[in-house]
Image (tube, rainbow, N blue to C red; front, side, top):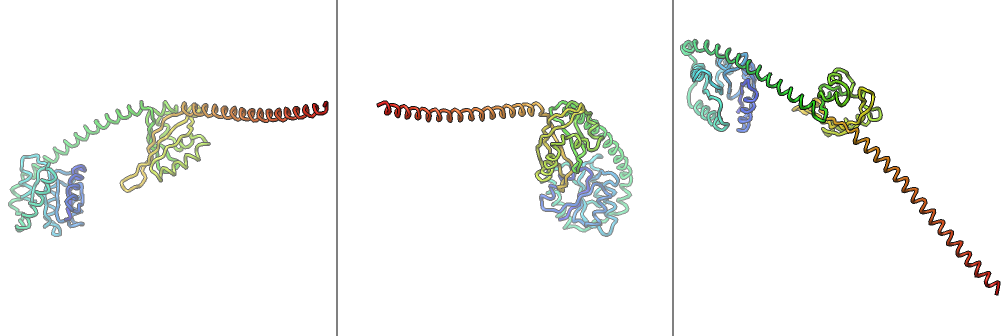
Length: 343
């Protein structure tokens, strides 16, 4: 069965879609009555499920438009919505030609059972005309409902303002945590020269540059990688697009001109279609570790040279001992010859 869902709340729409798809239905989505009307005409669904309170065109206006259009007027129409005026919405919906009004929220199985029950009843009864008397009877309520819609929209605006403040508070908290974290977090574009689009504030402590400087100056990241590391980093980025993640170490020039070692863990973020969207990198300074590694390497090289020198001396001692033994044997031979001569 092809079902058109008309719901302005994305989360509610997604949950409803999952439920309907789970029961083997094809689902078409719309976010308000205007979009729903367009998709109803285009796709001719077997059933329409709509919310009542929506922007641009609410559910009741949408229902009236459906029932006045010859091409879609016979499509079963079910409201799935919360109520704000007792059960007047449900009575109004039925009088305008809705086949059922299911009050939110419902458990998924319970909701599906009600849908099936409604469709079974519809298959047994004739089409119910929407009379002028019924429309006149509810004219006052339609006007009242418009006021309710306006009030609810104002309430939603207030909710959005509250949500924005909460989001801002979360962002501030997140920025605080990022600023004092040991790693610098930044995001980059997916095309060369991989411009930085965001970087945490603690970049200033690591590099000497303000975070804003990274974002405002194109090529900044690529231009400050040590020349000896730049070619290798480009190869590492090629692996990033193949594997989705790569880790590399490089030298980065600080504002004071000195170089520090960084260990960058880069991950590729893709959209739902698999298209690369951005690169997110976690960067920590490893200068002390690299310095210790270099010192250790130098000591190892010195030890190897000493070992090689020791081996060389040992070989020379063996050769000298061998020559001494040969000389000793020669002396003994000459002594023996001399003794024979004396006799």
